[in-house]
Image (cartoon, rainbow, N blue to C red; front, side, top):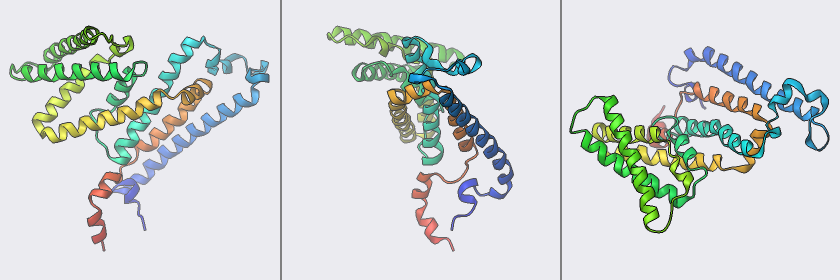
Amino acid sequence: MLDSRWFFGPNGGRLVYETRKVVGVAAAMFALAAALVALRVLLAGPAGGQSPAATGWLAVLDLTRLPAGEQEVLAVLLLLPAGALLTAVVRNIIGVATFGTFAPVLLALSFVYSDARSAAVVFGVVMLVGLVGRWLLGRLRLLMVPRLGVLLALVVLGLALAVSVLHQFGSPADRYAIILPLVATTMLVERFYVCWEEDGARLAWSLMLGTLAVAAGCLGLLKSPVLGRLLVRFPEALLALAAAMLLLGRYSGYRLSELVRFRDLRELRP
């Protein structure tokens, strides 16, 4: 029989009241999203157009009236909260650790429009140059802000070298592969190196692999044409995603990885 500790942690009794407030806000956001979607569907005119009653402020939610190019960009942007929700589920429910909260989503965003080969080469060279540069900078004992500035310069240099290498071998990089989140990549190199120094190579590589695995899942979401079109048609559905993240924000119970790790202790419980 499961008790409240499975959902609210060891001190579940004291958290029930606050959790109920969050659940109430999340339920209101779910209801608002459902009401807006239902209202727009009911007011839709023939062939999916908008009736005169749906004009005005409600028409602002209809992103399908925008040019096709803008819809394509907005579809990716609207899917970013879905990637953040996936990251939260993987971190807080499954227990897969990553570097930072948004690093997987930002990495996935940089590879949405690029081919896999160019993305892999560019990212690999950038990380290699960044890590070697960070190792050399660690011997100089610089302050953090100047060190990150130098590291950013090295990351940009690595990006340029990767593009040049691909071109040298007659396989130019996809121009979209160049659009890496350079600041996020710089911070990823910094955190990887610091984790390696303080906690060991095993944990550092574990966090890096977790980050890349979650980024791959986020990339699948960001490239989903069905979900993209759905959110362009009903952007108010983001309220439901935000509500789901509100609920995750109050979860402090056991992660699935912990249940596997401590399964022998559970069997010994009286």
